[in-house]
Amino acid sequence: MLLISCPWCGPRDETEYHYGGQAHVPHPENPESLTDEQWAEYVFYRDNPRGPFAERWVHSTGCRRWFNVLRDTVTYEVLAVYRLDEPRPELPQAGGNR
Amino acid sequence: MAEPTFDARVSPLAHLAERMRAAAVTGVRGVTLTEWPFLTMVNLRVAPASAAADRIEKALGARLPRRCGHTTSAGPHTVVWLGPDEWLVLSQAEPATVTAELREALDGDRGSVVDVSANRTTLELSGPSARQVLEKGCPLDLHPRAFAPGRAVSTTVGPVAVVLWQVDEAPTYRLFPRSSFADYLARWLIDAMSEYRGPEVP
Image (cartoon, rainbow over all chains, first blue to last red; front, side):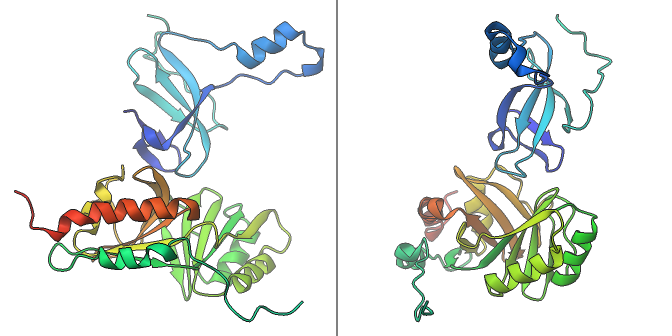
C-alpha cells in the first residue's frame, strides 16, 4: 500500500486515489496538422523508466484534485508530491536509470 | 401550479429505520445508528480570499475553513472543507433560503451555489464503541490525538465514499454517504455493530 501525501489533505492511503498516467505530456499545438502516427504517439505512447517517474494522481475520495507525484518505479518510494502549477522538483539524489 | 400539500420525499434509508433501531447496543460497549434525513446541504465553490468569499463569510456569519478537516459553525450553519475552493454548507434552514442567501452574497462573481441536499443522506453513529466500529473500515486515524470533535473529512468507510464529521466526544460521528450507497453503508454498519452486543472476547 502506498502512502501518498495529497498537497491539500496530507498523507492518505493509496485506496483513496486514482492513477492518471505520465505527467507533463504536452497537448500538441496543432492537433489537426499531425499525422495519424504522431497523434497515436501523443495519445498512447508513454515513457516507462526504471527509477523516478513523474505521474498524475487524483485524490478521488478526498478533495478530488489532480496533482503530480514523483515515484520511483523500482522501490515504489514516493519521492515528491507537487501541485499542477508547480514545476517538477529537482532531485539531487535521483540518478535516473540504474 | 398548485402547491404540494404533503411531503412526498422518501429518505434513502426509510426501509431500514426499524433494523437500525433494533441494532442499537446499550451499556459500556454501546453504539447506536440513526438516520437524519433531509438535512440541507449546499455545495459552495468560490475562490478563497476573494471579495465574493468575504461577502459569503458575512452572510453565513462563519469563516470558510481554509484547511482540510476543519469546520466552522454559526447559527444553523456548519461549513465543511471539501477542497481548496469548495465547501459543503450543512444547515438546519430550508435549502431555498440558504441558496438564495449565498447566491445573493456571490453576486454574479465566479463561483457556484448548488442545493445538493438530495445527493447525500446523514447517518449518525454514536456511543462508546462508535470509533471501533468505524475503524473496521476507515483508513484514517480516528484516535483523539489525530481526530476530534469539529473535524470533518472526505474518506471511505468500507468501500463507500463518505464525508465523516465528528460532532462530540461520546464519540458521535455523522456520515454523509451518497443516497444510492446509503443502503449498503447502513447494512455494513449494522453488521459491524453486532459484535458489541456480547462481552469483549479476550
